[in-house]
Length: 170
Image (cartoon, rainbow, N blue to C red; front, side, top):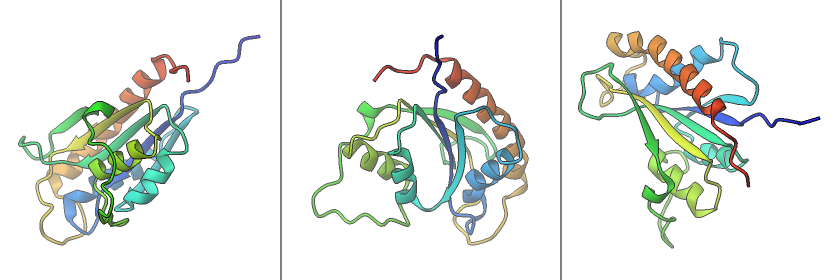
């Protein structure tokens, strides 16, 4: 009898819901929590808790999907899928460098995870071009709110693609 291992995938919503469209990751995760997801998929909202995210990633995942707002220069509401390659992430945290556990951006989280040897097999970022993230305010702008449903579909499609890839042998 052959036993197949379920690929372990973490979908992590990140961002600050007090800054309008920066709450995009949280909104997508909230919608995903209402869906039936495949075995092995964990969905969590980390908000601005970058250190919590880093520790969760170090539990050992085959893939990490970060969901966030990200200015890439497109029209507000545009969705992006970007891959973070371990080789492209700066190495470590410098000795004496202060790390704010409540303000770790995705790049710092990945540097920390890489420094302690906890890099997941594959890291993808599903991001939305924000309209407003500089002024305090609760709730997404209409254009970004309208992109949440498409982002949920994109996350589900990406999960399916990741599950079809072979599990790396360790």
